[in-house]
Length: 256
Image (tube, rainbow, N blue to C red):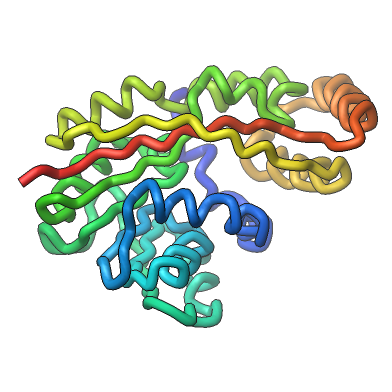
């Protein structure tokens, strides 16, 4: 994949991207993030690639933590700042570069890298920067998708060119683990999580239309004409249409 920026989430409409932080997704992921990263009240947490801030707000409120959300998209950060303040903890948002974090050394106790490394030109540098801004004993938590799993997600499983593009741009789990080790982290845990997301066909078709226009313009009409009927048949064949959506959480610590 020659240009990872071609698939950057910033190419999406803000409202469409923010749907990733739906109530059911927040209810599923935020407790897992807090538990896995061992986030406690008062801790300074950096959410790198925070997008429109859903996880930042959720972690702040759930753990009563002091969360800083950082994203390269000014549009996303402006949107995030407009949301109501959490009832517990605190949250602030900055526009910045994951590969050159605008923070002092050892400024945080926890760093989250959620579905961001595959969107960066230099993901290894982002991992090194996470190490730099963590204090001794701090934990980094990477949330990512294995390339082999990308092909089986909805709608990728019906659209070969989309599946191939996603598989090519996602770093292997072993590669991310090597980046963490090279940066100086001690590995703690690699965990595979099944989301088992209940899907709605109309919603999936609507989202696919936006994604195809914004990030996957190479999906041709012929491919859609073949793939969409297969997706509909699959949905209609089940009382509950469920996508496992396996996701990996890699946790590591900065010793000292």
